[in-house]
Every structure is written in structure tokens, then in C-alpha cells.
Length: 328
Image (cartoon, rainbow, N blue to C red; front, side):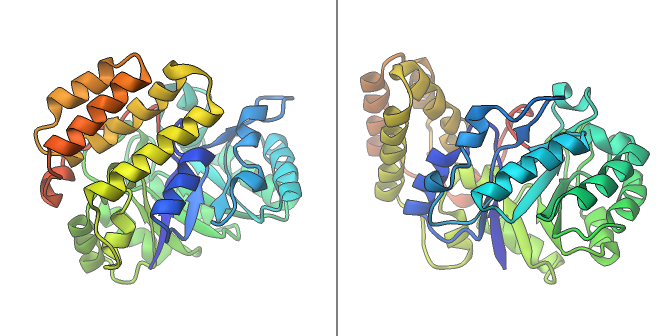
């Protein structure tokens, strides 16, 4: 089994990836938060800096691209090729309203003829390997028959399927029946993505789909950065290492960001996911959210680690909420 770390906009940049790899090695691939390119413009310099080879040493990184314009896609591929990348991932899964309204991300699935023409052009214009991260439609799972028919016309490196439609956002249950059909019908190798938050949830997935060789995890890894190592049976999360991981991440952000406010924004966003790792943590999370200075924040985190135990897996893994603007 191969495990991928899903891209999470605003969270899994090079700082997070590097610290995660240092403390919890073993991911087969990390995927970058998506690059965008507006008409006639290159990707923002901030986005490209996140992909500099010197900032991503020691692990495999796949840049993800969000666009519906083939020339922009090809231009980004040229720049990424110069960085040494050999694979890119096309985002056809983001459900954000601002993305979908421009017929990008999951919104591109609603215009299959345009999607087909786009894929035809990008496969002619780049020599990089192209994988796709997709949802199964905009409104109904039945849309995926037509969509997969289009995908099957092209030599995809891999098809990463999040079996929800756009209108689900991250609610409801992933459609395993449609995923099962896609496993049989896809010409490209298939990777699964969706709601595998715990080792037990992964076990249930493997019972249903023992033939699946690749899995992408996102929210589950943000909640428990040791999840893949626990699934493989090589490790188990404990408070000392989790605290060391937290402190190293905070220190790294201090080194590249200006001022307490920017560092706190990054760290508070992570607690949106890690918070339910601890039993009875609400009052601490409230104080973390209100913290305005790093010393105040650090004191609250220390108290949380000292005074609360880690939750049982089934408790910590349930009801992981999610902001649709944050993911891909």
C-alpha cells in the first residue's frame, strides 16, 4: 500500500511538509496546495516558492494545478519541469464556490466537452506525467460515467477519486459503490481519497477494497500526523512526540513569518483538526483560539498536553469538521 498526503490549502505548505516528514517519515508522496494561473499571468511567486527544490528535500512532492486553461497549465508545467518535477496533478475536486463558479476544480466536471478538449490539449503540450484528483460529479454520481469515459481517453499517471459530488462538499458519506465501479472501469491506476480518519476506518476500507493499492489521506493526517505509521503497524502516537512536532512546527513558522499574528494564524488553523485528539479539550481550544501573543498560546498548549490525555481512536476520529475553502 502506498500513502499520499492530500493537499490542504493554507496548511500543508513546505514548512508543514518538512516538519511532518522529519517527525513522521514514511509518506510515499506529498501533494502541494494547488497552483493557480489566471489568463495571461504566471502563478504567484509565493506559490512557486513553496515548490523550490531546496525547500522540499527528502520526500516526493507532486505539484497540483488548478486551472481550466490549457496554455496556463502548459506554462506551469514548463516551469515545474525546470525545477526537476516529473509529475503534476490536475485539481478537479475543489468544491469551493469561488472556484466552481469559474468552472475550475469540481466545477470543470459540469462541462465535460470543455474538459475533454482541455485534456486533449494539455496531453499534447507537456511531457510531464499527469495525474488527476477528481470528484464523481457536480450534482449526481451518475455523472461519473461520462466523466470517466473522458478520462479513459488519456494516458493518466493515476486517477485519485474522492467519491463525493461537488454539492456534497465534505458532508454525507463517500459513495463506495461508485468507487467500486470506477476501480473496474478505469484504465488508469486508481487511488482512493475520502474520510479515512483512523486506523479502524482504513481497516474497513481495506476489507471492502483489498485490491486498492494507493490511498490519499488528508484530514485524518492533520488530526493525527502519525496515522500512516499507525496503519503500517510501525508506530503509535504519543504526547511527547506530538508536542515536539508542534513545537518544531511553531519554531519553523517563526523563522519564515513576520510577527506573532501570522504564526498564530497558522498554528490555530492546525488546531481546527488536532483539537479532538485530546479528551475534554474545549476550554483549552477556546483559549488557543483567543490567544493574541505566542507566549500566551504556548502556555495554553503546555497546559493542554500536561492536563489532558489523548482520546481513544474512535472518539478522536469522529466528526472531523472541515472548511470547504481549505481543501482540494
